[in-house]
Image (cartoon, rainbow, N blue to C red):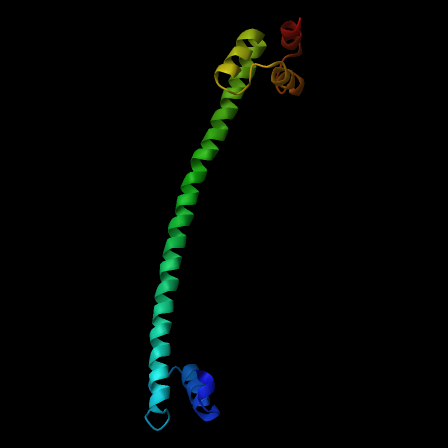
Amino acid sequence: MISAMDNRSYGAISKASTAGRSDFTAPELTPEQQKLLIELRRKKQELLLEIQQIKDELGEVVSEMESLDVPEENKHSNKEKQMSIGRKKFNMDPKKGIEYLVENRLLRHDPQDVAHFLYKGEGLNKTAIGDYLG
């Protein structure tokens, strides 16, 4: 569409754009160019509106994502608390500690999972491990 304009008219549009002018006098633009300019301005307004809508939607999505992250962090800290309680129970009474961990779905009641828990041994009393295996 712009290629249909001659260089002189295009230069007038460019200068007007950079100078911040929004209106042209009739001798500067042909009727076809005036229609094109009006159409371009209309399209610009539509695009600016769409950009604003997308910004608004993006803001909503970001706030939703942030609110979803919070419960995940709470789940993680809650799981850590339960695991800590399970270790303490294990150190006092190994069988009850394992039962607690299984009931709270922090540990499956199969030999491999229990062995991994004992081997990892974070915060576990070595004597309690020996008593459990004993």
